[in-house]
Image 1 (tube, rainbow, N blue to C red):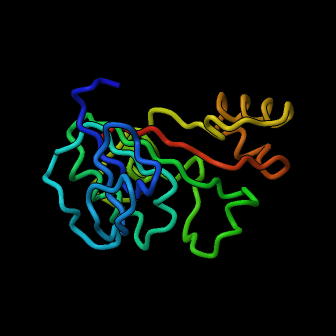
Image 2 (cartoon, helix red, strand yellow):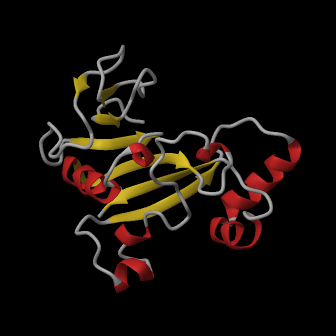
Length: 179
């Protein structure tokens, strides 16, 4: 990561990405901007950030499409967006009653102009290419989970369609690029 990149961490909480501007709804250590992420617009200029992280936050918000439209607004053209959220089949994802949505391989298809879902339906003007999908990123796991994770990371769509019902993983990360 280039030190000159301007980074935003949406919903950073106490675990802000190093070097980022952290925004969250309550003033805790590491939060630079206190703002309710369900209230739009966010207090940033257009095209202000090179990288936007949304880790363990999007699934708590009321309107994920509007959030992504706001991320599109504040992210520079060609900027990167990293979204980490619970995978929809994870048993741990259903423990917290505040969760409003979950991630799937196709969670960001409606923003990707190369995907049939985006081509067929015009849900949003925000456009992001899906660069990479990763399951259980950085998590330590047992040997079988490790094997399943390797398969899922190499073939995310096949994992979701054929394997995930039998061996659900816990998190999914989408790396996107603003078009």
